Length: 101
Image (cartoon, rainbow, N blue to C red; front, side, top):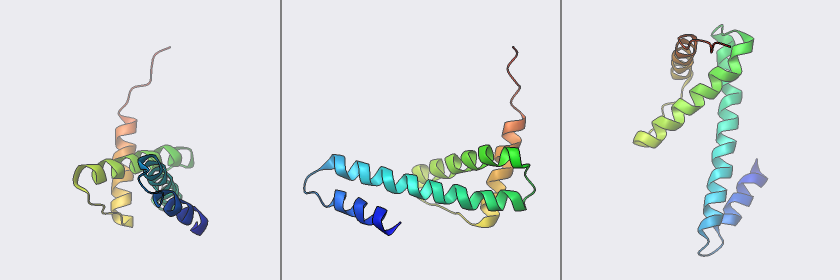
């Protein structure tokens, strides 16, 4: 993790290089998302979400938090809020009708 962050800062440190800043920002965002999903999976298991649905539920909740951050620049990530968003994602997922083949 430290090497990743140091590499990101090295890229940002390149004078006048917007591309490096974008790449570093993407690397950090990807790392944060990965860490969030790992922690979300533990919360989802504790919330009783079926194992086969945890991955999709955590991806959905990560997307939700990303949209929240983009909308107002605020992030409220705590276990209770994650569980609430997971339940919303699961409810929304079950309301989608399967495609007819």
